Image (cartoon, rainbow, N blue to C red):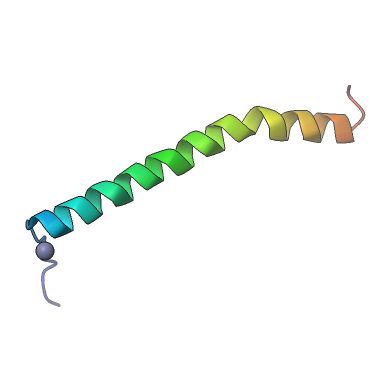
Length: 48
Ligand SMILES: [Zn+2]
């Protein structure tokens, strides 16, 4: 197997940074949605 080479050119650095930022955004959205999902679940169970 060939070793994975990490390209250091600005193009790839920018792409990598945008990829990381989008993952952080997805995680933030997931965290923000969790209370809503919990409330929906509890109300469906008749606890509210
Ligand atoms: Zn590159």
